[in-house]
Image 1 (cartoon, rainbow, N blue to C red):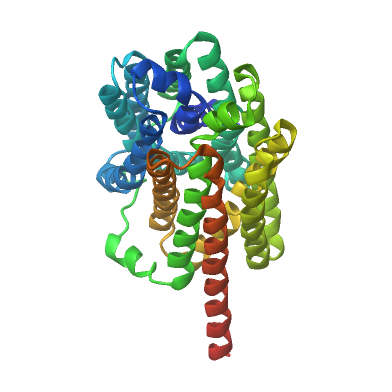
Image 2 (tube, rainbow, N blue to C red):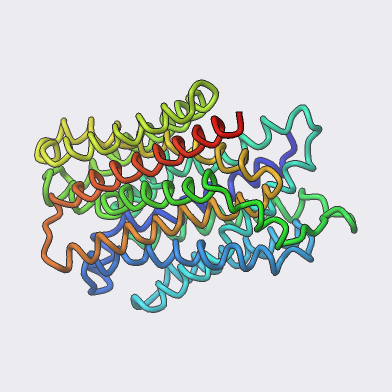
Length: 388
């Protein structure tokens, strides 16, 4: 496998870690910047909004440039933004630096996918894409707990510095090893013709389902460290182990979701969403016991990621005539949900809702997502019967 693909995977790991690292260092960051934990949690929302809005816009704007130029530029900006996060003297500059880093998130993965497809022969593209996207998977497994451990040991600023260092290494390798794109290799696709292919309920309702699920996940996930400290009562030194357990669950969930997509995607998807609601319900009681909470975090990690592959495959199949736009809007749907979840959690906490009640949002959202997915499946089956 070309060294450039490993560098792209390392860059994906750094970018994925940067998105969620706030959750792992929330209490010390809030204390140091003299803001409330709900206000600090809005840094997650700000990043997600930057990805959701800036990603598609910048992707269209960058279409005229070569993928190598886009990737290297995005990574340089990313590294500078992480440095600003590490030295930010106040909340405002930290928020601005997060928004700067977020703008290039979607652009990187779009351009990276194009590059990966050209670096290897057709028969090895599956393995290459798995390695590239695996950077995000490993970020869920190791990035969040690793950032939390670094933050606990050396201060929250060093967590951003470590992510920036990874970005520097990846950028240097990409500059040296990523081949330039020859003129004429990157074709432009008519935006309006792509947009017309997205007017299908399978696509639109899948985006809605993704958003609802991510609201559930991030209303709890953004504030899981304060919950573990203040409700479950665990020692701060073992918080990274709980986060690692959730990361292991997420990797298993991604694998299980892939198998379910090859088996019976819609029944499996609906079952996963109902299980997500169930385990958010049990969490209301389990969070007072460290052992039960560990089990719940693991299972929530599984259900929180098993839904992704079936829905993404459904979108790309229904919108196969517009794969680039459909893919970028999948990222937008995820990040609208991420922003909404972190924001909703902050609103509830500021309104006086205790940490222990936040999983109730997951119950409602899990049931709502299952209802939307079931409706979409029913409409699809009815349409198939009508055509037959």
